[in-house]
Image 1 (tube, one colour):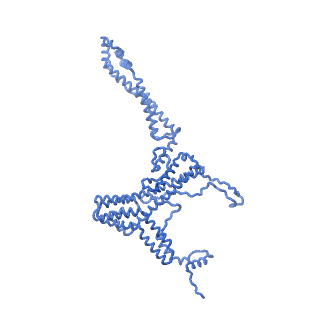
Image 2: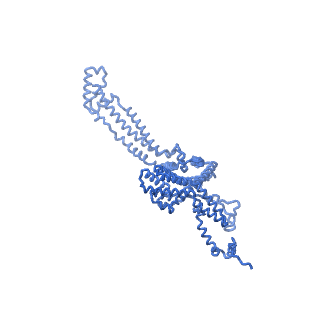
Image 3: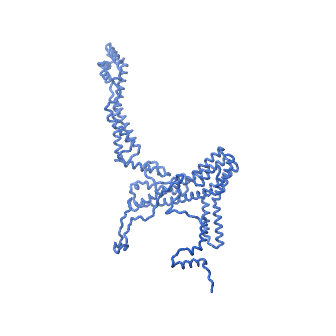
Length: 568
């Protein structure tokens, strides 16, 4: 009987505990949400902006504390066994039977009246349903604060704080800086990623001593760029001058690297475009048609894809005997042509003949010899084309041996080479971006080195010591001097149009209006045509009337061209 009474008491205490816990948790959670929202709104105004996860951490932490408080309060409010018995007696109208039975000591419980009382209490309590009078529900007043607090908490998590423009700007700067992080130096501290210079990713390339020195210099410049003193416009002039010199050195070296890479890629593209001569066009019909077309247009990425496709066809035996023969003719012609291009053989032979002809005629051949020397130097620098010619020759030898596995392997290596060239083109674009950022950085350092900070040059003019004023009329006397006038040259980026394929293709950079330089060989026809018209130019050239006879006589006497007069 005593055990059955204890069972009902335990069940009742558990339901009272759960009800107190839920009501306390709801109220404490609402207060925690409200305080979290207030902190999220106020924090950007009183301290430095914090990361995005800060808002979730504050809310989760406050709700955890609210849960601990609810558990603690529910334990403190849990009734004792005697208090629980009294609650049951009151709510089920048991006339204190359960309380009296529970208050009996062991001696009284063994007496007949005690046994009768325990039996009556157990019988009465077994007929009641504890859940009817001790329901687990939430009080209405407990919902007053939590509902609006929860709504505000959701808004604070989903949207930026209403009064945190500073935080929004900081987040934008941070994302921009992270996207432009120097790729050769992974920064572990997130706070160091806020301000970085744009530096191209050359870490995957084979590093020469020159490239290693360039990277070391770039790290020094990037370190100054991320210096808090520079970001807060508090950099001292001496440090700014030192940074300006390093940034200038880095800019010049990047310019040189960009020019070298662009010259190499451009020369390679020009050489590959020569694959489109008449004989090669006749060989285009075959399995390697798409790859040859990509080479002709200088699209290295497309060329790699096509060579990979061709390699798979060879390995899977998808080429017919006729296709194999066509591919063999294509490779033979490409190997022969690429070898000729690496040696610049035709152009060199043409120049040599022109030099011999000039010497026979007694003319100066120094300019032609310089052009020949230039072609010979270019031939030495065409390493990429030489590698291509070598692989083409190895592919030809593999086809002569009818070794399709070796052919597929060499074709894969050739595709990898064009993949590297495609990456070189991306390097040129990255270098162009870096030069633009470093130019802006140098410009800001120039102002700080003079102690001007970020102040803009004014248009106010100053009077020099020997300034004569406005006496003497317009244009007379010393003029006023604008010491802050902008007189130096600046590089500007120009937006280019898309090509027919929807892509922007990098074609290099130049100072001032761009022009195309022609070699002596290319100008040969124009020179001959101009030489034929030289005789007529003496008569048709427009000259001032007073100087016409003098110039004509000079031109006629130049080179013994004057008509011989008979001696009397």
